[in-house]
Image (tube, rainbow over all chains, first blue to last red; front, side, top):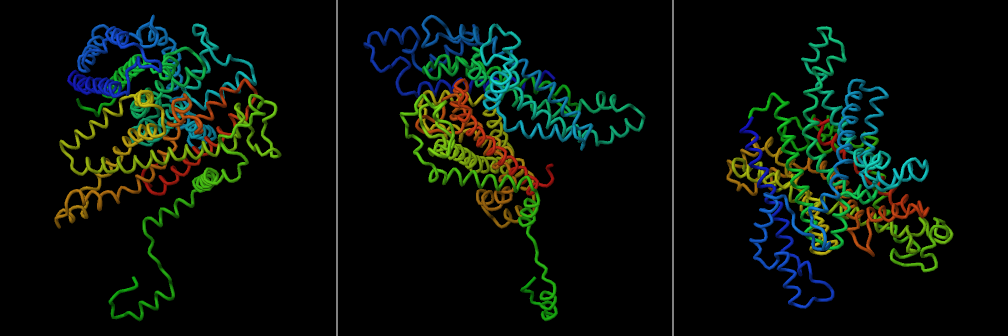
Length: 307
Length: 309
């Protein structure tokens, strides 16, 4: 097991380095520096500013310093746009928000999606199954930026139940719509994957044996079928996580929740490279560590994997 | 059956005349399987209509997509409702531009993005995957590990970084979409290549001294076509979603051009204004197009790849 994790880490670390190098190369390739504006600054001022941000150093030194600061101090450096805040401040401000609704979205997507999939598989070819399949096909075409305005129309404009945006420290009525918008399409995919893998497992010999022994269906499903049926679900969690992290940007913009995504998009308009790069690398780190966890989880559950 | 050098040619011809038995190729089988699938055929019909709308809708539109009607600017919530009389079939957006013409344009650009992305995926992904699978060994390991690494990077952010640095242009958007669209395809193509590279016809080609590159292009790739067609049909809607995502954030297609994602964004920003049509029409076309592609893709999968159900 340890050598398996070590080997996985051996892939994860270069991936992160590649991401950092790509970001840096893109930044160095940018025409003009981050402080070249319409109204050119006096050269002396520009030189001073660039020295302040370490931009007068050779490229490789900037990159090494950056990586070093991130690895040792988890420090993403100063923002180029907000004089009074560092990238860390921005992350500290936005990340708890993103984490809150992101966590609940993941929980809702997995719990509801897997449950729908299991019920659909057990009641194959009944109305419950058809409803579940219809939902999972329909929700494919409802990515988060489509869900968001539809939810606002229904729950804010027509019913008037929920506020159309904002956060207010994460009160429940402000969290509901972001969670629904972010989780629906993944819930649908998880339901579809669970259903098909559950059907496959339920038709296998060891399930027939368990049923023949006289075990009740409930026990067969929960004790025997669930674990093998969840394997494809677990391997889908990695891409789903990437999708949710990406989708959080849309949720932040659509509902003005003040999460990281909103800073990301604002920085994209302000050409604040430092913030964009910091957030990209932070999300890259999250993605890679999550994929690592999923891999380990998979290896732990699947008895067929030898490490 | 027709050109047999057979002594009993007369009898054979008689049989042929009385009972017209024609061989059916695998492709013909697939076509008939596809057309028996009602959802897929309906999807295809809808898709044809969407394409016609995107191509020729501009001829029906009474206004240019970037023509600003100053008398309606900012007054669209009560004067710019959809109506047949003044020629604004889908109403007018906040800046007084004809939404019908803009929806036509948005549909056209979204379809274009989807198709270009899928095309890059087909060409690059198929060749990459087929090469990796055919050569095998260390090369395969390195090539596919590269794909793994690229896939675990959150590419949306890197693409946005690119768009910020090099300016938001259509070209950058196409480049960015092309850069990631081929990853999945290369995995699929590799898997399929592994399963056919030990077949007799490949051995025969090797035995007769065909060069590896020619084998890949002439013998492997044509046998991947079925699965490649299926996945590229399913890739088009993914690319449309991808582009719309970026355009929704305002970082993709720039004014005066537009795409369905950008229109959905403008529509949802104006929801408070009561101009529901600004969201409704682009959203309807977006959903219809995606569903049509999904159904056609599923139908193609059932038709061309019967084992995977």
